[in-house]
Image (tube, rainbow, N blue to C red):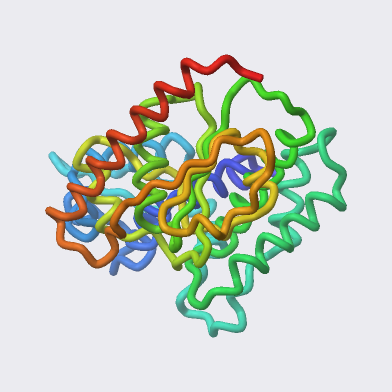
Length: 299
């Protein structure tokens, strides 16, 4: 199997910005685009888009075509069919766009070989697909299924191997498209690999709001591979800190975890100035939480 066809591609496409970039390239009239056009379409800064293009190029997913001072980007033709399958081919009827769960499950089983048996990985792939597909018009269902199943298996492993040296924080809001994504992005940026960060929603939306992506981009914080996900039991069990924002009753309560409920306005539908105020409020709370986490002995 070509190494580009395994889990790395699934992880790259789970990032909403990068998958949107590939959709724009695929849908371009001649199958190639400039960074400037992508930045305009996405409402992001050109340096941010260039960062994503470098990552896609390094993974062998896009190719660069210099033309004078301009550089065109297109999808590598060797994996175009694979990308089309994962993104969903817009020329197909809806009934033909179901993810190839057999292929996804095989990739996940390979990743967790020697850790979980094949039956377990296949069950988590199908359960994760069904949880995500319960909503209408979920984009990039194949890559999201793979990312969601992998995250759940990682959390299951944490539960089985407690105590953990690296603390885990779970942010939960209603749609998992605004407040929890702001908090998670900021904490990842500040903590790096010192903290594992998760998000979930009690009634998840289809995608992270572009206004949230832009608000984070303004302060140099990438969304990463985040997308709205339903709340699962293993996510709560694996967390050391559970932070709820407007949906406290949705979380099951288990002993040995620190529960926080942040009273924060919902940024969805708000003007940019209000979103920035909410973002900065969350930033202060996240910094205080990180200080508490790092000053608390593990165990």
